[in-house]
Length: 303
Ligand SMILES: Nc1nc2c(ncn2[C@@H]2O[C@H](COP(=O)(O)OP(=O)(O)OP(=O)(O)O)[C@@H](O)[C@H]2O)c(=O)[nH]1
Ligand SMILES: [Mg+2]
Image (cartoon, rainbow, N blue to C red; front, side, top):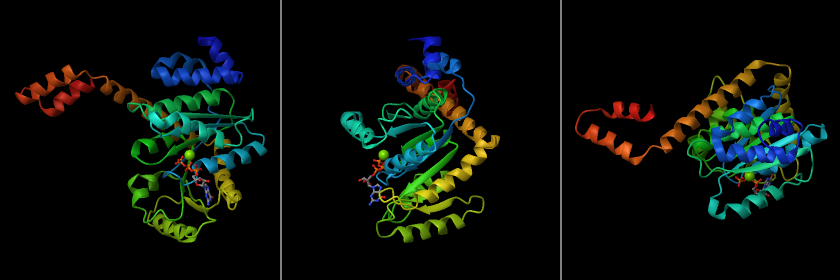
């Protein structure tokens, strides 16, 4: 299948075609532009970003949320952006996908994307994969990414709502605030509430939130293990999803702004990644001899 045939099959919800489309996007970046034009969907799917430090239970919560939405009859797509290195990656990636109990359900589509090896185009690729899932008729798209650094967190910029998953014992919030996690969440989850320290963590977070005058994200204690608090989390997400369903354009525009920005950023970074060392050296020599300033050289490089 190629071109318009592939697009048609994806829109019919053909899973193999969807996989093929995703691979195309992953392999050829903007080379998939034609396909993305042909599948151009109405923005109907609700995209929920799930981020947080490593090991806080994001995948376990994704698993819970799949259950929640499947019981409502909604089709759920999952994109897990995995920071695992390509060297050890293969096996681990497989394990994580298998970990999800829903991988045999035809109303669920799970895809892992390795975050290594992208010269800045990760968010762009993620946004493209999200659009393919949307075209294939998924109602909810869960986008899991480990929030370690700025580029991981930028990935959730394409979401309509963002859940930041934390857990007891993260220590002071330095790690969390440094990564920019305190700015991106619509809902803050203290997962592993079955362990000690969840209350203290939640109180701490609420204190931090009160410091900000413009944002009032919810703070919810849950346990992906026992199911405690999952209903509250669901309710908090539903509040946002209802606004979305009622056609409030601001959430859609916010997500589209994220997609456009991340796509442009990806294009620029990719172009910079392809800069030849010869060209760079020529520019460096010009700066060295005083013919150009660094700023002028940078402008030439990015042109
Ligand atoms: N006690 C307890 N353990 C949990 C809970 N949720 C997840 N875990 C455990 O925490 C570990 C990490 O869970 P994951 O769901 O893989 O966490 P993650 O945030 O997706 O991890 P990465 O994707 O590697 O960053 C696993 O051993 C889970 O069994 C919980 O609510 N309580
Ligand atoms: Mg995970």
